[in-house]
Length: 482
Image 1 (cartoon, rainbow, N blue to C red):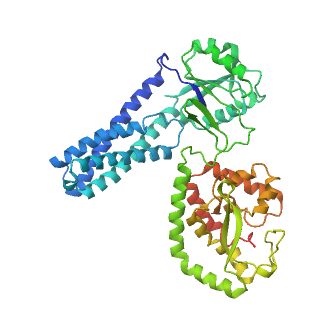
Image 2 (image 1 turned 180 degrees about the vertical axis):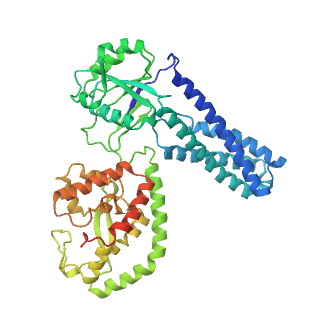
Image 3 (image 1 turned 45 degrees about the vertical axis):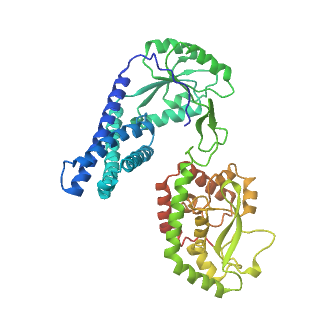
């Protein structure tokens, strides 16, 4: 849930146990990181040369790399609060910081002409071992912190002004995930509250007029304001009450009715901006970069391996009926741009409709005998690997529908066009969940779109791999395709 920080003045905050634990954890983590950098260098040296004590020409690079690690680990930044953030994001940031250390190491050894005296195998071992040990130490540190927080220690206490749907969702999430280390103590009522307080198990601490009195007697780290965006006067009133209170304040905007997709916040210059709709949760476009690289590598490998099969299919299609081997059809890609999707032709060219586009149905007279087998086994989709290699498609993503179908369903299904925030895929989350092939009922297409939206919100490389495996296990040979 989007939390927009609108005040972070903690210069005069009162001392609390939380600050003691956080400071101790920060110092321990910094010391552990430098220890791991040194230990991994010594382990790599032992594996390469059979000794633990490095020769003199290796001591200078190791010492300077400790300095580079201190710089890069702070620049990236590895020592910010990762409370509530996923471990994979932290490991990815760690990987970039560790790579930065070795880039500085390379420049340093090259500029001082030390490279000829340094074993490249040792450097490679150091990089791999160091990253593995750093990732392991971070995982152990997180596990310890998770356990501590689950015991009620090092927990941030939060109160909320206003009870809106986002607050209920956050409260439920924090109750189910004690490791996050945040406790929503209660809320102060306003005229804009929703009437479901009895189901939230969230204590009402009084009305907003009692907020300052409460903060003077109870230890709270943050105040969250949850009021409709149209009630700026009430938001300003709460901020005015907190003017003399040195406490963190966050705004939880209620944007649940705005059909948002992977909302996030950023700052352009000095202006805070809320992103309401975007293709992924990654504001730095790492989603598209990572996915694009993986797609092209896998597509190239698949084309090399499957080329004999594809040649055989092409010959079979050509002999089955007159017409081209490949079927080309305009589809909408990312951003709604038109591209030509490739498939092995599975229908007779003399029976394809020219005006109205119909989905293939069971026992469709347009489908050839070899075409029926290709559609049932999904082998007709293999040429789309060329689309992936060319960048118009992904291996995994929402299946591209015909342009006419998009125009039709776009008027009937809310958020239907949100599917085009990402590249379409050869297979997708909807397909492995049984929504593949013909959709004779509107509710079937609605369900397919729901799975597509869920995929866009939850995307990760692991989810893509899972869908690929499920495609092989569940989709290939599925009888919904005609």
